[in-house]
View 1 (cartoon, rainbow, N blue to C red):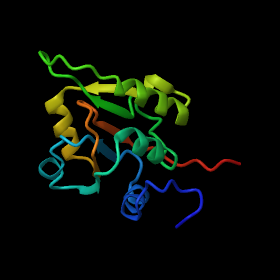
View 2: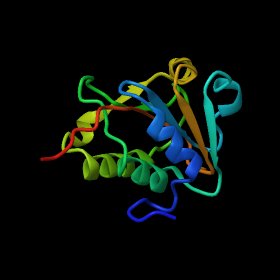
View 3: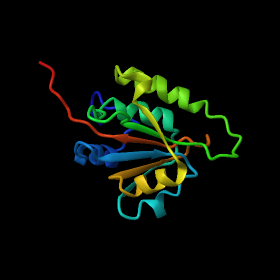
Length: 148
């Protein structure tokens, strides 16, 4: 065990987060996301007993978001015709604002099938047990700037 590291971050996930470089992407997916097929060419980490919000909060405590892109956090858009509410997105906005002063402006939206294509290029996909629909979020890593 380590001090100051959220316990929800497994050794495997910490290793992945540390290995990632600036501009690398990671997907934190809901339980319905086809992680194993989409993630054939990336690292897939299982976190089935957890939801996306608590994992997102823990990841952002150690993970800088890219400052060189408009939307370093991307959500999967709801498909036209799906009558699905996405209150979890408000939770994500609150968590992002807690960790980055840019707040809600960090968030972009990607059409569902384009999201899958972007996820295929991700460094890693973390699969959670999240049951909310359209609860997938993709993060783009920035650089760590040492505080003086």
